[in-house]
Length: 293
Ligand SMILES: NC(=O)c1ccc[n+]([C@@H]2O[C@H](COP(=O)([O-])OP(=O)(O)OC[C@H]3O[C@@H](n4cnc5c(N)ncnc54)[C@H](OP(=O)(O)O)[C@@H]3O)[C@@H](O)[C@H]2O)c1
Image 1 (cartoon, helix red, strand yellow):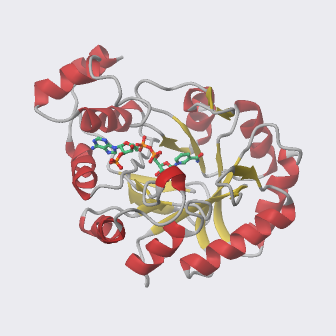
Image 2 (cartoon, rainbow, N blue to C red):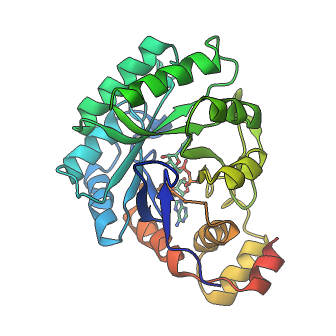
Image 3 (spheres, rainbow, N blue to C red):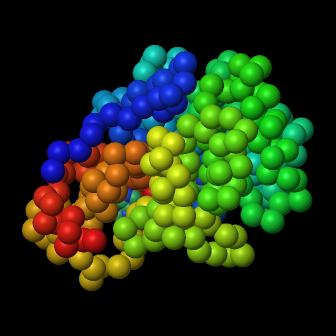
């Protein structure tokens, strides 16, 4: 079945942005535990430079990757940016000196984080910013989101998205303003919420109906990480049928699952990057999709 090749972020707003429906997530371009410089800096820059050759326009980052490492690499590799590149960052989290992931969602925190992103990405406006929800935070969700909308009115942010969001929070957010995207965990083998290392990760399935109803673009994270460990699943059968890799079938499955899904597979390897990009052209049949379920 042929798939929709492009996707529009903010389709129902004054500033719709249309990009190829396949992006790249930069989190793996850091050292171990998403901390410090990548082991192979040249390869990291080569991957970022290869995005445009592969038609990739959507690049996902955060100032807490590194920290600041992926933003600086993006600017080094791609600045001045092509007009059609869409850089998406996220706020709501900061890193402690001990590499911990800390809640950073008070209004002043969010403002400081946006300023840092603008500076490191060398831009005056960020096209899309996800407010990354940290479940259990002391700051009310509405207070943080209000600050996001304020910064949007000030022109620092073009579109607002939510990450790691629950259905209830998404419904509240939609009463407050436009939400262009949701970035939650989602992969062939992991569609629902789960908790890891004490952190609750919200699944895309929980918010799927709302996203479809409101035409919110769905950006999955951990789609490969949560699925590639299983070498004996139905994905393998389809991979063998087409002579492709499990990663490629995983990504093709997500692309066929719903037109509003924009995959952003992460990798630190140029070979994996090229392999993943080829998944965009892998057409699965109706029978394949029924088999995969
Ligand atoms: N909003 C959030 O809370 C949140 C959380 C996590 C991530 N994200 C974003 O989502 C993006 C995607 O998530 P992710 O990078 O964690 O996970 P992912 O896309 O699920 O997978 C990355 C893992 O899969 C491996 N991999 C990638 N391509 C492969 C291939 N073709 N064959 C075999 N292994 C392959 C990578 O290893 P190699 O490096 O060896 O290829 C890495 O271990 C991130 O880069 C980040 O931008 C957002």
